[in-house]
Length: 347
Ligand SMILES: Nc1ncnc2c1ncn2[C@@H]1O[C@H](COP(=O)(O)OP(=O)(O)OP(=O)(O)O)[C@@H](O)[C@H]1O
Ligand SMILES: [Mg+2]
Image (cartoon, rainbow, N blue to C red; front, side, top):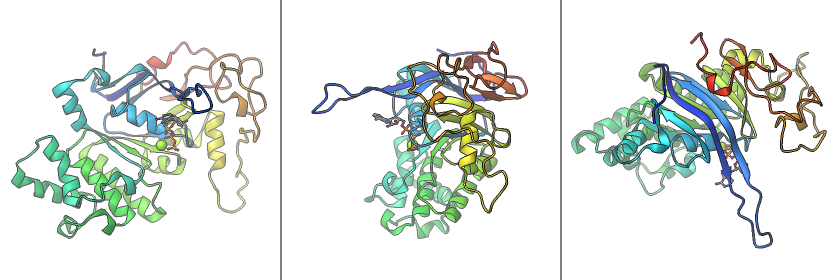
């Protein structure tokens, strides 16, 4: 099914949840279900770099895997170019797999050690029968040059063990880019790399967007990286969308206590007066959470003890394109459901 769409949106997630069923073990009959994502709704605009930020286990990779259709949603829907991803089959699914690519966190695991750089980067062309066999080497050379592996002939027949971590990640990006995708998900692509190599990888991603207009979802736990690269960011906490808005705005003027806590947690140099600007994160949970209310309530220092443990805050709009799920911010009832967010004026 298609939904009404404006040109600006390339991807839409609507009330997307993913629950991993508890498996149980030798000693227990059933394990606990894990709610990896809880009714996430968001839009990604054409040509932007959209940051998905959250701590470990918050559901970032799960979101990426659902979007590229490596896994199925438990409920909710995902649309790319207003086509429902989960409904795609046959030729349409194949076309989708060409248009959407994912770059994984660990370049040591994502490349096959037995395949040369040429094999790795040309494989998607073969799978999708793109270009003549005789042209493939040129396309691979172009892709290697675009990610800074120059001269490409020095790298074509190397195997991963002869590449540094940064070079491996460049090969992984070249493999994703060789298909001219419309949308790329980069899942913590630099978490295994040192700072200067990370900066080079960030610049490749920026160039991909600036020169080729490739829309990207950049997954990170680092607000600093998100600020450098992203136009808008979404902050998630234990599978729930907490805040969403323009990157500068969310980082300079964070509204959700969790975003504030993340900003407090960024290491700062020297003894800056505002090293802890917000102090919204309690070190200890102050009350056991029932299965309702705000997911952040147990860790929130500014919670309203009547409302927050009992009701779940929906997203409220608090500025142009700036949304927050917190009763302490904006109007309690904005009248806007998460479904309408992203269709706000101003973009
Ligand atoms: N295949 C799976 N089976 C069961 N639980 C899973 C599975 N994949 C992920 N989870 C759980 O879902 C939650 C979200 O995991 P996810 O990998 O999406 O987090 P993340 O934000 O990417 O974390 P990290 O920053 O560590 O990569 C975690 O609690 C994780 O343990
Ligand atoms: Mg992850």
